[in-house]
Image (cartoon, rainbow, N blue to C red; front, top):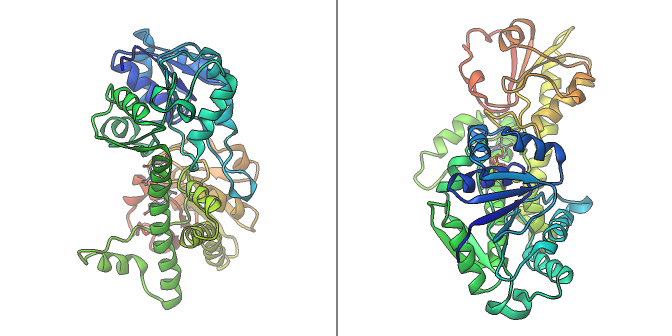
Length: 411
Ligand code: SAJ
């Protein structure tokens, strides 16, 4: 299948880098987003999200006339849907953004088009997308009706890039491609071959959906194991970091790092899609989520107990991002812990080298953004919440007289 014009629906953390990378391969890309500010920013050659080098790739694609953003969908050879899939109350997946994307592209669909769902989705979402499209376009045939002979081809190809390394991983990672028919899979492979150097692994749509959920659940369960170990070790007065280093010297053991909880938009969300599809069966996956979700409260109590030793507690929170060396505060356990600390009887200083200004939700509570030097000088209690590179080079002698709660094991 030949692709000249690609439409990427949803220009966020996944869609925008994908659109820019495809445009950099010489194809014409039309990005569609409901956010006028995002559309205007991209058309001006700028970016509305932070990801290393993304600004350079977007600027050059826009200047070359290969990338353009719009609110309204336009005809294309292929449509890649990369919209959010959050969960609703009760942890059930919210597919309303996918449904809205279907509604937006349906009027411009033409016989021979390919539609790929990239959003992380519960099993069955690709079939639901195809069903919505067919309801809006009864004049066209879809794979659930016509299989390989359908007018429109539909596939799932979950994104699996790591924030902070998106541009490299978009090209280098292997991709799992699950078509709703063999012909759908083949069409999707030709699309991804235009920019992916990794291998394209073929399966069906449901298995591709489950593969993505499995990857993030695997990581969540393994982080939960490390977090549970850290709590057991506190009780038994054992240094969990030394313990993990020793256990990891076994050739078949590779324990991950404990932390203040699991943040971000993916690992703390996706396992719930498995749990809500199979609540009776997904016992371990549910428990892992519960262990990781309870870790911020545990760390908060440790910090409070440490600060209480002082008449005038001054707590420096080192890091509020959801993980090391990024500026992303979404679903960050470090941010939650810092907010809760503001409600306690302590002065709260925040060190976050990756942001210029504190979010209002923290500054309104009285927290102050300060430099690392100033925090180390003024605070009597240090709470290490993120293992940013700046913190790893702190001289241990400088903090020898502070009370430290080190949730990331940097000291
Ligand atoms: N974390 C720990 N200990 C660890 C590793 C991570 O506490 O040993 C915490 C981090 O601090 C962070 C959270 O887990 O709060 C998630 O961070 P992460 O680096 O594990 O993952 P994400 O959310 O940045 O990206 C994940 C990736 N999935 C896997 O590695 C299996 C990425 O490849 C996916 O594309 C992404 O989710 C996604 O979009 O689904």
